[in-house]
Amino acid sequence: MNVLLCSINTLKRLYDISAVEVGQHFYWQIGGFLVHAQVLITSWVVIAILLVSAILVIRNLQTIPTFGQNLFEYVLEFIRDVSKTQIGEEYGPWVPFIGTLFLFIFVSNWSGALLPWKIIQLPHGELAAPTNDINTTVALALLTSVAYFYAGLSKKGLAYFSKYIQPTPILLPINILEDFTKPLSLSFRLFGNILADELVVVVLVSLVPLVVPIPVMFLGLFTSGIQALIFATLAAAYIGESIEGHH
Amino acid sequence: MKNITDSFLCLGSWPSAGSFVFNTDILATNPINLSVVLGLLVFFGKGVLRDLLDNRKQKIWKTIRNSEELQENAIEQLEKAQARLRKVETEADLFRVNGYSEIKREKLNLINSIYTTLEQLENYKNEAIDFEQQRVINQVRQRVLQQALQGALGTLNSCLNNELHLRTVSANIGMFGMMK
Image 1 (spheres, each protein chain N blue to C red):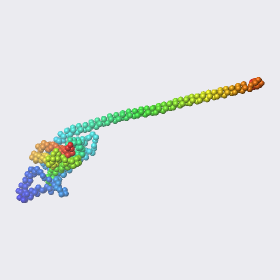
Image 2: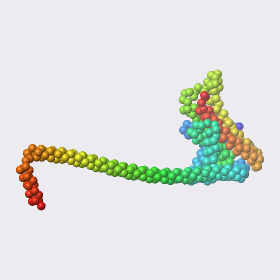
Image 3: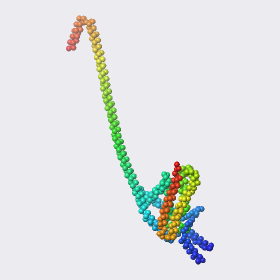
Image 4: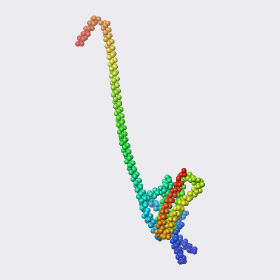
């Protein structure tokens, strides 16, 4: 029995060393649903970071902006630029949506890359960026789908659906398929990139704990920023596409 | 075998009984690399960010100053224009008042001159009437005198004899004598 326990312990240690857990989740049951609690927790942290920083900055507004206000105004200008170039003249109502997407994804990704989440150990799974979980990215992508449908329908009414048979009715199946591939590609791109980033870092850390992962972490930071920008830009582009008129 | 798997299951599911724990394994939690990354990010990012934000601030400041200058200029011009408007208005008032008084004076003058002319004409008229009256009165008087003289002459020629002649002469002499 002793031998058995010993072997079990060594096995467990080996298992721990080589344990790069994927697909382990910390479940909460809310109503009839099992939710991934680690995603919720990190999302709340991200939301809290965004809200608190925004509240801190807007507490003392100046005509000539101080550092924080200046930074936030710069970010807002950036988002507005992105929406304007992608959506066109009627970009105004969509700036909040695009900005929310961009800021949430950006801060999520960077929190995954910069915050030492792993200090807090969960019973199951581990804390990581919210965008590390496909549910988050699918939710964001579906919101984008709803947004561009709403944009098109509210702009053109039922004439919006005439874009499915343009330029020729032959393309109807492909055009319908596009509505499914858009959220699919959006969500999988973001999810895959962030998960891959974090996995690479985790694997490298488990192999060589010091120094070596640092360049990869910087690469991860870069990719995370780019992914946030790509998601926001594509969402804006889809909205702009459904708004623009085919004359 | 079943025992082993059971114990594995037991070991595997053990953490779910516990709750959030702090992981103190420094290598696994990776805080060294994270702090290095964060430090480098702050070190390099700070300069870039500061430049960017300073530029933006400068731009905002310049824009505000420019617009303030423009506003001041506009206000100055507005004031100038208002001053000119006021001046012109006072001039216009002056002209108007002057014109009114001039017109009034002219009117009075005209009325006066016409009045005098009218009076003169009235005088002329009266004079002419008087003159004509005088002339007519003279004519009537002359004719009456002539007729009276002719009548007297006729009467004298028809009924004058010596005795009467003498009596008359003496009566007249007596009259003259009494008058003396």
